[in-house]
Length: 432
Ligand SMILES: Cc1ncc(COP(=O)(O)O)c(C=O)c1O
Image: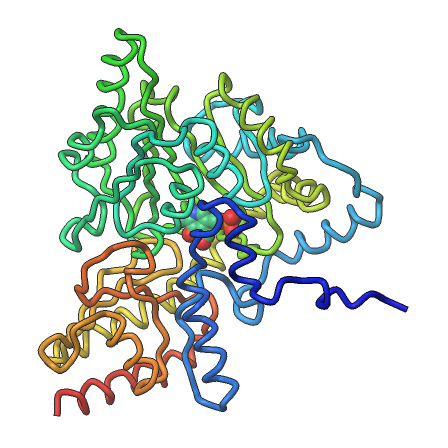
């Protein structure tokens, strides 16, 4: 016999939850992107043909993790590599990451500057917890993925600073300088989710110099520094013709303040494997390690061992990345070319040339054609063209300016042809 738990639970679950949890947890928001993805699934279940460009993930039908990685994970499980890993990662992986950063970014942190976690999120959240307390001033630039949730958890006084399409949705140096006073944590990401753009070299140099100058002043006054999360989870998915820059390579003086965030989630198409890391000044590493250890947010040991093996296998990573980037770029370039063609024909669309990650910024300006919000345009595109995209509002940019994220991680090249034709036809119908 088993006890039916529901007989013992409060009848109004929502009210009981609000009494039980803290106000911060009660007001925690769910992911806006996942809500749209659920809508897409419902339409697909009804038999509608939908091109799903919403999810910042890879469909294994389209993009596979390296075969050798899969084999090695299985091998390490079979060998019994199944106990707790060290809280900051197995030594093999820490040193392989340290070599990767030395060889590809020219940064020699040593293994003592690496802290592994279960994906990029734990090092991000750890950094928020390390450097902020409730009421502290924190800053990010819009649009950007998920920062608001961390600010909410940490109860900081968060400032979202909007950027513009003219600057590829990155802040200007002046915008950053204007925000630094009193700020404890600065968050930037390049290549950028949701826009698929990369930060300009001179802008990054300017920001890095501003951070150094601000911290020199603070040091003289004995004040805590402004710390900088530099999220580069897509750096190895930078498109041909674009360059990924790193603030520490460009301005080494900012090294004491920069926390790089990285993972195999995107550049090995392994979002479900949960291997990520922070690369940070060794003087802070033990604190990140302690936090990740207490939360238990370490990466699974077999995945760590297999990642270390792959990073060390001569040529294996580059060969895999060449293939992955080719597949991603083919999709992004196809959409970009089609959007430019529509624009040339007078349809009210635009896009920014893809530079990295798995995203394209699409503009659909139907504000003179019966729509007043991005959300209305999104719903219309889904309904009329079977094209599912995410408005930049899901990345906290408040303006209804017609910008959307298209993510190609879960679509096939052939599927795109139909979707782009449907979008073209729907726009024509709308314009009459
Ligand atoms: C910019 C950025 N940083 C971090 C993450 C989180 O990565 P992970 O799945 O490894 O936690 C994502 C996921 O979409 C992302 O887009």
